[in-house]
Length: 292
Image 1 (tube, rainbow, N blue to C red):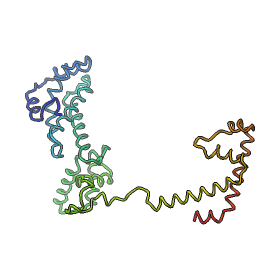
Image 2: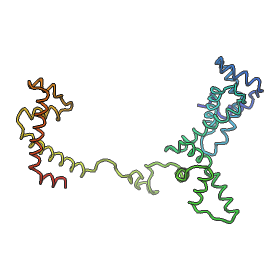
Image 3: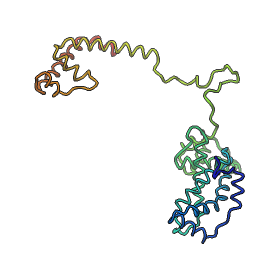
Image 4: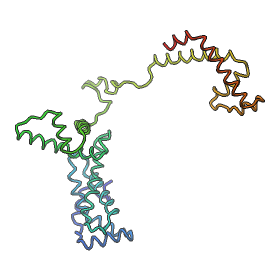
């Protein structure tokens, strides 16, 4: 939906017919909105500077975003500026609003440039909007001096010129090198050709790993059952309730059920584990082969 219910053409014409505020009127409207939340004053202030927002939006058309969307984002930035503007600072509203309008448009362009987030840090944002311009400038200067820059030298100079890490330059250059394409696109012009998604490695567990894991679990379960058989009924009960339940029972609750003290239950548990350990030690050769 267009900002304010207008298309970009009609909104532009409407903005060009809006009044031009003098400093005194602008200040009065800003105070009325800040102190009294006068919506009529806000509307008049925003409408007067919508031409500024549209003008700034037009500068970003080269990034491929629809002009109507750019104008809407510029309008949102303008409204945010009006909401945060402090007339006591002695600055004209237009001067203050420029930053908010530009920031809103830039954020929109970066969000919609690619399905993959292009960048979020200040250095990445600076690179996104200045990389090509700085690159062209450095190449012109090198040509004028009769020099030829390879890719690595050029990226280093860009990093120095913009004041960002070399890694950010390399990352952004790759992101700007081409647009997104579908993984369902075929690798050749043949309709029956393999899709790019078919070349991606399946991260799911392989069938042979699933089978091997199942066999290992079976072996371990057999050893556990064998070790449990070396215990008497009471010891098996304690081990089962303490270690094999989803919600292990406490020594105190077991003691109450068995008519034993908490300390006695702990001693029986330790003794049971010792028996199970000896049972497994008798299978030392099998364990060594299993662990391989």
